[in-house]
Image (tube, rainbow, N blue to C red; front, side, top):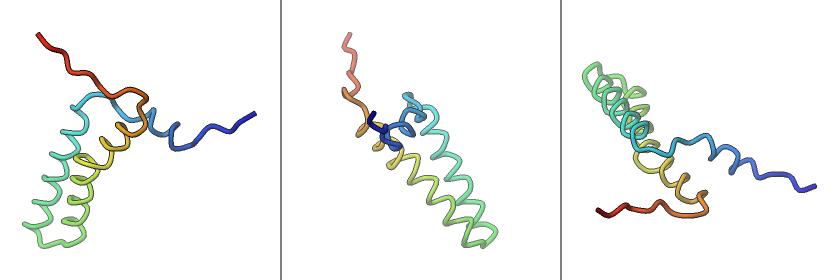
Length: 75
């Protein structure tokens, strides 16, 4: 019996709509701005990591693990 790939199992947990990714980027910007205003470097870095995850890494992982790409609906 073949063992399922853990990366594919984790990719099924990713949301298929844009809302959570946009929210993650917005939270990342809020964290980074707070870090800049309070001069806390690790908070700025955490905000940048959140922005990267929400804008690039998670959507890329979702697209790479789907069997068919999302289709655009025309009017």
